[in-house]
Amino acid sequence: MEFGLQKEGLSKDEVMSLLDWARKRDLPYSRILSSMCTDPHPIAVEAHVKFIEANLGDAGLFPGTKCIECKVVRMLGSILGNPDAVGYITTGGTESNIQGIRSARNMAKRKHPNIIVSESGHFSFDKIADILQVEVRKASLDENFMVDLGSVEDLVDENTAAIVGIAGTTEFGQIDPIEGLSNIAQKEGIFLHIDAAFGGFVIPFLEKEYKFGFEVDGVTSISIDPHKMGMSTIPAGGLLFREKRFLKGLSISTPYLSTKAQYSLTGTRSGGAAVATYAVLMHLGYDGLKKSALRCVNMAKMLVDRVENFGVYPIVDPIMNVLALDVPKIEKVLLMLLVRGWRVSVTRKPRALRLVIMPHTTEENLNLFIEDLKEIVKNC
Ligand SMILES: *Cc1c(COP(=O)(O)O)cnc(C)c1O
Image (cartoon, rainbow, N blue to C red; front, side):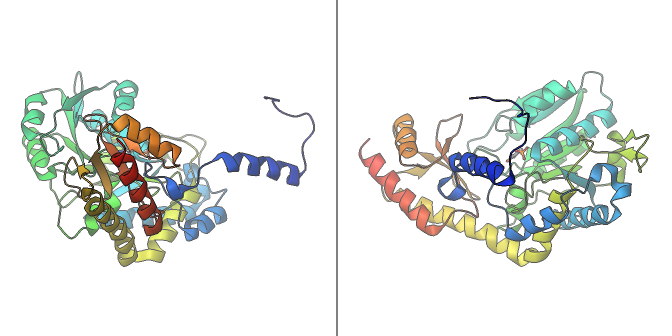
């Protein structure tokens, strides 16, 4: 039934009842093991609502909100090895990747620009190929599902504008050898964009140290998503550059606004999500973020230990809270999990059961999931 816009408005109660009706069909996060998004932290929601009308697209009118955004960028920079990094709060990993590559493309000035990203790159890079008219060359993966450095070297040529390294792949949760990519990028004098949309809020807190941020010399820009493991509200992504000069590749002059230039992709943009991110980071601090990330990582490890007992093994040793499990008769397992109310996903190559353990996952629900999976696998 589609009615279009009503001639006469409804009462607030009537509208709310329509919203409740729609909401009932939405899935609560509790049984979702496929999403990299999660319930926002309550303080993020409160902060977002307080700044609901703030438009960072016209920052001269909202200097208070702008100042908070700068502080968020500084905090993200400090998580990523350079508190002096510059950037802004985007709508998410997709915009951050588009803009990181746009800056590199514009500054590198290649005749027929190409970029190199691994086969397990996020699909935002396929949008980038289309929007930015750059050729996206896919490097192959090694046996650990990380980018193969030899393959990257083979693909680089005089038209390469940037290499992309992924710190926390969407499908396997693996971390590309960023230092190796940095060596190639520096030797060739090209940009190195790190997609840490998911891993940015996990990898810095792991027991084992992985160098993936600005502490690696060749890294020029990084995506990191507060609306995933940062527990901010949607839409909150982060795009950071090592130095201010990289913003030149994005600058567009803005007549009739309170500011002279704009670096963002969108015009009008949410101040609420930037402030929500600030609220979470200030409230949790380094220790709180670490605790939340490690809770997810440890639950993922626990899940692996438990499923190994009934013959299900990860296709690659998990580093973070993203798992790819080799299950028999995967299509049947996926269906049977679905009818039991679980939302899981599947990797492309090879097809494996993909699980993301997020802050909304409770140990109780994870136990229920493991029991269900055990039964389903036994009947396969
Ligand atoms: C989630 C994700 C993205 C896309 O982020 P959106 O916020 O959905 O636009 C890009 N890259 C990686 C590695 C991701 O995990």
